[in-house]
Image 1 (cartoon, rainbow, N blue to C red):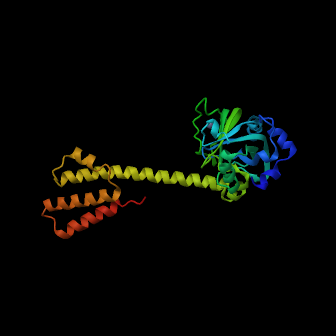
Image 2 (image 1 turned 60 degrees about the vertical axis):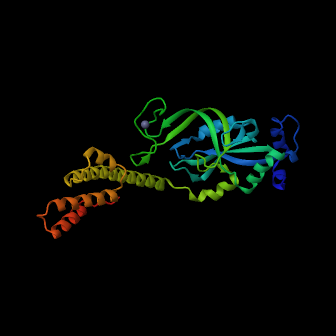
Image 3 (image 1 turned 90 degrees about the vertical axis):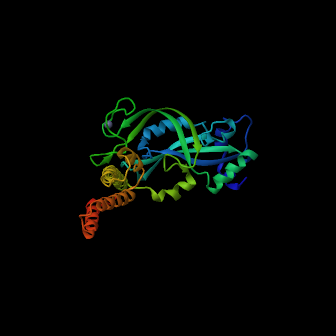
Length: 303
Ligand SMILES: [Zn+2]
């Protein structure tokens, strides 16, 4: 057992820990650590807990055991929360412009052979990320205030309305049933506090967040245009194939070109057009080449 854990457990904490122990534990019997369970910033699902929700969750999380990778088998229940509180960080704001607050828990692990691996990992910072499992009574639309789970207000989480991203506001928690160590948490800031400050630098501002969302939308639009262009090109290839009298039925050709990319479709169309020109000997050689090239130039498309 390393010295750090021994130093952090005081008599008062031991008293809290011993509420859950079958036999009286001493400072040598336990390893304690702090962990950020979640915060009030928007997560990858474009949802966030309000500060009030965090306050309610703080009460609910005391006594709850932490597990590995959402596997609730008894042997995986490795750490228990003995204290939990909301910490306000006034110098930091959330992506939607409110004071940043986080739910910080103190947890202990009984020191024994089976827990040594996890303790070593926590010390080295490897197992540093957590996710929380809780029941939330209401997911409010940040644009219009409707309960997004009960009635469809038409607003989509992650979409932009009047310059702001629509978010789901998580309220009225009814149960906090688990927290677990996982590889990638839904909440980017969740993690053992030690690593929290290290990973904090890459957090994005509200402006960057909105810009990023607009950029993604632009990419989606371009991908959609690319798809529509491909459908059009497929049709052109089939028409060219029929005109070139290649001897393949139009329907069969249509299914044959389905998996081709834009470059392949253009090449195929070019070779069909070449063949068509061979059937039309009245066209001089030079005209044929120009015709094919200018045709391609007109259809050039960058995605
Ligand atoms: Zn709405």
